[in-house]
Image 1 (cartoon, rainbow, N blue to C red):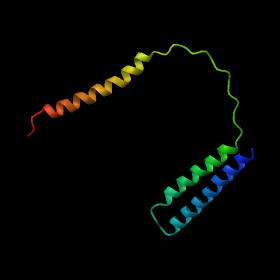
Image 2 (tube, rainbow, N blue to C red):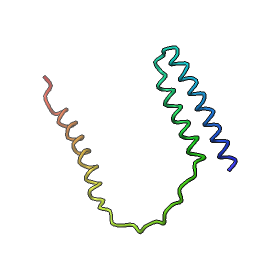
Image 3 (cartoon, one colour):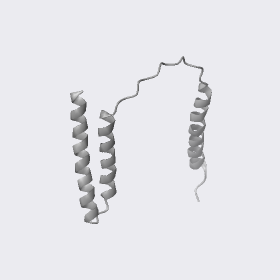
Image 4 (cartoon, one colour):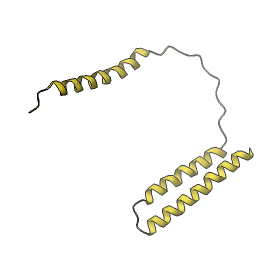
Length: 95
């Protein structure tokens, strides 16, 4: 439990530093203020996620049949189309 507090505090401090950099960048009319704002949100979400209580996992349900042929077809069709487009591109006479 103590380690969670240390990590949450570290992410919180890093989030405060990123927020400070975002404010400085925006006040200087720099273009990277949005980047520091995104880092601020990410770091604060990590800090809150560490200390937030976790949901208890539900009991696992038995595995049902999953039609793997559909997944294989969804992977193979774009791959085949990509290969065909490359082949057609190189076989086509250049102008």
